[in-house]
Image 1 (cartoon, helix red, strand yellow):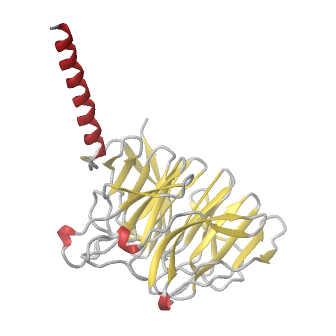
Image 2: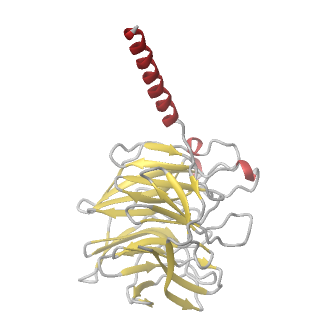
Image 3: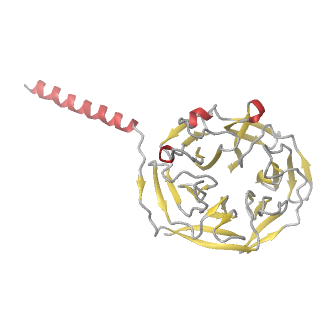
Length: 350
């Protein structure tokens, strides 16, 4: 009798473990309603009479630079610096071709700048690549970039490792765009592909508005050794059945993992950043309305949950998100108050 009871108990325990394993394998989207009291947005700087979008941000330990972009009427080949609460024009002059959505980063005392578009109508970016010494103020031409792209690149620098996400153009007449991660080695001026192949068909399983040169627009944030990528899109048809794919890229293995889709409305031209603990995606435009979005979502990668946080004071598209001196910033782009450039600091309450 005792043996029979023990057998029944072990059977119940084993069934419980099996059921739990099956549940863990099912992807679940967890969405928490807005927590408006957790964050505040502090306006750091504002420029009146100008617009800067499709510019690029790079930071050193002591200074934040913004390069290039448009103001809807004129192109901007200038370098700007954020100094306190002012955005000021620098005397630095870039000798390269492109001035919109460049590959741009700083490592130690060396600035790297290249690629970029030369107009709003260009199909793909240039591939010239340059190094600028912040001490000697001299430019040096490096090897050309080994890729062409249509949408803004995403750059990550941490522990002297330089990783760049490119929506690389390929195929006949460059009509196909695929996400590719490169690692750059400044000592040898060498670019190496570190990601496994992920095709457009893998990302967008529906037949609605599959990505091409114009629609493949990834934004991403990095937490530890994982980079989380949102493949933005605009769906003009079948709105209710058009999800926004969300993936994780493992820097150690080079592998992609599909995660539950982003819970916000379908969008493009949004920003992304990480404070090391959470990832944030916000702003943008849905494509069905002229209104820029204010909503911001926070992703907790430890538990796989999205939470909507305090909305921005103004809706914005084409904004950039970045970290500088341990704090989170969002700015530039086109915001609800036309003909202004605004930089915000996102602060979490204790």
